[in-house]
Image (tube, rainbow, N blue to C red; front, side, top):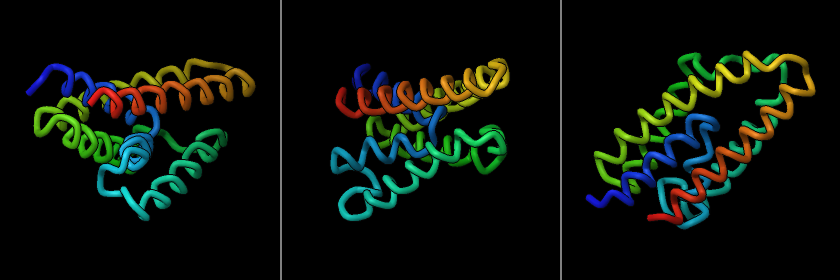
Length: 137
């Protein structure tokens, strides 16, 4: 297994820990993963919904079982696509770390304008990471 593939899996996991639907979107854009082909529109629609919902003040914690489960599931599946079983494990660990870091950041930032800016920055970082990961492979 090449180091490049494992780095790609780690980057994908980091992005997936910030936005759960980022890994399937990045893979689908490159015709890969379970949501490639016509099913990519499911991933795209869910990702748009997630990006919008994330900006709402009443949005639940990303560390809740459902949110964390999606992040770990999509990240490990994508990491497996990029780097096999090792990639799946690395992506899951990276996603867990990013989810905790993102949660910490969002609870530290005070004031609605700053929270919104942090959320948009997270969107950009997440999608930048997953797109770079898929291109590395």
